[in-house]
Image (cartoon, rainbow, N blue to C red):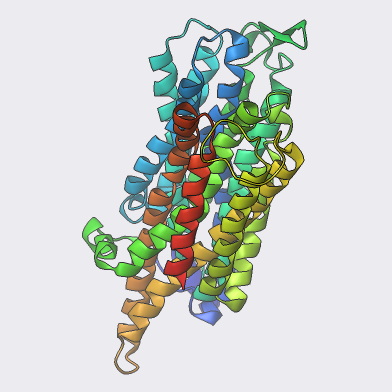
Length: 469
């Protein structure tokens, strides 16, 4: 038996990696890259499903009035926003779970919990007498999917060397984010047929274009159940735990004393918070401002572009620097919000943009939102590339001399704190998924239109430009 094969055997105890040194180029080329990619490609579909469940209410809420549910517009916006509120809160705890429990174990367990809201929603929407509090609880349970992001990103950051973190995190998050777009695209299709037969429940009758149409609204949730089960099993038997990634909460809590942690939380609220918030509120915003437009025919395109371009943001940041990309990205975001205001119908709101067509332009409005979604995706990739690199570089700068043991400890500490910061920034950033759709609802209720909320977004992006500079 060769020395390399003996080392490889000794470095793996079942699904536990007892030796993991991705910064060592020989180790990376010999066995590290293959193992890291395996864990990445199992992580991606698990995260995809988490996002799908997290955002399923963005389409379910739109369909509830047609199904006979007597909820107000503000209540519907609450249902679209509630998963982000609980998901963001859960992310705070999920941020620290991988070093405590192990990446493989936690990915499998957290993915399996998605079965709870998926099954619950499927049964609840079949009865239009289901009380609103029950629906709100189910919406909050969808936050289990939102929480998974922080643990998933923290886990993947341990597997890759510094120069590959941006690309790896971009792929994990970007392809995972596709769940938002796919759920908005797929749901209107799967509810038109009884694909689960007698196991899927009875159909419901809605009026569409003056005609009575049979739909199976429960399929929007049930369609994800078998895939969640498969992904959970794949994570348990296919992924790895890293022994060196083990860390106490106290070791990870060092990030709360680091100013860069709080700076990056603010910036990530502007990028990912915008992505998930715009995605959650986009269908209802279209429906409220352009009543003649079918929101589900268009809304999925925005999250699709934002998700697909996120890996590009990580790759570009690996090449030219995350701070540079983030700075220019926020400038475009602020201008795009002004573009949205320009093309909105000029209603009775005192905050309406003074220029633009009086009746608004859906084409212009939609294109400006596509620009916004693209910039949120690029910004997601650039900010998440910045975080682990900042913490690793800070630890390495504190080194004195070339002591290999001290350098190894600095790399471990930098990766541990960087992973915790990635998760925590993801947690605070996710609150944008609550504030944005809720801001639309509150602004419409108070002023007659969403313009006040959009002006606040533009001002927030201005602060992000200043902070990044």
